[in-house]
Length: 396
Image (tube, rainbow, N blue to C red; front, side, top):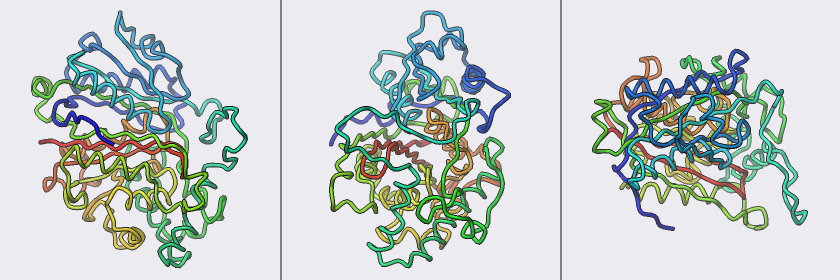
């Protein structure tokens, strides 16, 4: 796989992010307007200064009209994109390429979802008629199979692994408890999490991310123009996206302990950004913790832990706020829930806050001021058939 990187050619100069949760007080239009206004304000621009818009949403709108109508945009190109759970990141990727190509000077990527009003309780995929061999398990069931597979492959006691998964959830809930934009703001102990009844395999409901309403937005411009808008732009170092071929569902040797699409996307992102050792070069990572076993595998697929060691590193506190590489310092999907179109941009918003020193003291990463790169990651789909995005952003 190869690509021509746009490293340091595009910068983010403004961002906005709503509070995530059951937003009975706001409609989809309201969420988009709040996120957009936040991004416009921090970049010091108005909606008419933007040349083109990309909207990421999976369930809440079907075309550019879903954004142009609430923002009252006059004769602007607005493109709606969707790519499973990487939809928000896809909107940013397209806006960045639009600027890097020279087609536009200023572009906005915005992602949002408004689903709670409908009683929607969990992620699903629209069943497309096929040859009858598609999976028929829930997402929780698919990700639960990581646990026995990882334990067998790496010789880990399943009870020990269960504790490590609870430690992941506890870490992310502790971070989210310090974040006013998060949906769930209650700390959870490892002991309490381990005592929860199982809903799929050995996973409890608190091993699973919730559903939420929310929106986030970013303003992107050419790097040479960035300081016209802000003294502290965030430069795009890498944008990598991989869509798998689904062979994992049919390969009897696939064992659920790795997501090949994620590993490939990470290799390409690190090549674009010139990163040799992500564990010592990244200041933070926002990873797609849709289920706690997913975060466990991602730590290894993204090169943040050696194969077979992520559970030990989690227990050592390596990925805590004060650890050697904080992971999900904003609370992750576990605390925010997962408004699919917004999640990727919400992750970039955390990188924006942390690298610019704007995260509050109680949530500031220990690596602040020592490293200047952040990684964001999404996966969409299931073990064996997924899409994956990896982005790297930096202040220098």
